Length: 320
Ligand SMILES: Nc1nc2c(c(=O)[nH]1)N[C@H]1C(S)=C(S)[C@@H](COP(=O)(O)O)O[C@H]1N2
Ligand SMILES: [Mo]
Image (cartoon, rainbow, N blue to C red; front, side, top):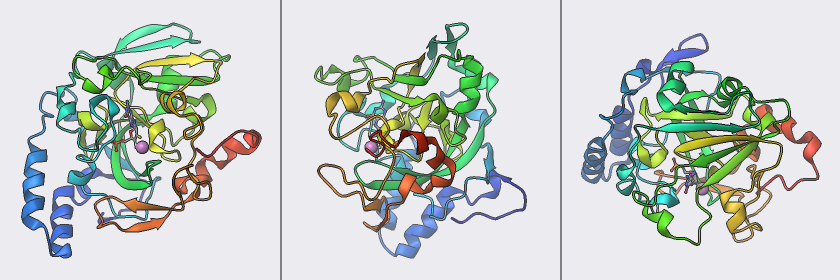
């Protein structure tokens, strides 16, 4: 990662090498694909972000507590290779996702909370302090990326929601609008996309609500205007474009669990030793690195932060 290191626990994002510079160097170093890269980059630059009223909040300060030994994934790779079934089942949904309207955007806070309410996403922005964190991200399909997310700790948001002590889980739901999301017209899927964490997971310092990426508002294909990032779990846990948080005493039934219970469980922590029923999880492909594979790490390398969450849950299916 080509960042100028300073002492202290945070550096302003403007001190980091701009991703565009980094990408160009990387392409040059690779000695191939410069023209194609430039064209893809230009196409990306035209993706609308100008209508986002939070644009002025970026870049936010980088929190250096979360260090990653890997190089950042190139922006044009991460932003054009996505899973967002609401817009189609291929990886190239980024253009289709531009149809999503991100204002007005209302968020419901429901269930076991002091005051169930509906808030405007911009009220959440007013209440939360944004920071940047570089995290590894691992899809259950055995590809991985390393990206700088901007957002706020889910723990701060949970506190703001004022859950009752009876709340043991937080369920998170994606928007529902088949008119703009053609994937939601496929009625065999259990829409809306639903995910969830236990309260102790949700208040672990790693759990993060991302509102930005690469020092800009998060584009629609990555889950604008706000999406979960739980970096120690397989990517499907990190629901996008969230509209509803339900605090509950029951483990929520999730989208992928409902579709294929034997393949995707509730806990879904990353583990190289527990294969998916149809493929190995021992290694992962770093996207945008010419097919380079590296060993998978338990808890995606975040065991120091999260392993203790599971010491009393050894009888559960923790790994996928
Ligand atoms: N609403 C919703 N959230 C979702 C998905 C989805 O299809 N719909 N896909 C998940 C999966 S499988 C992955 S790997 C990540 C991908 O995030 P990215 O496209 O921002 O890299 O989003 C997760 N969140
Ligand atoms: Mo995924």
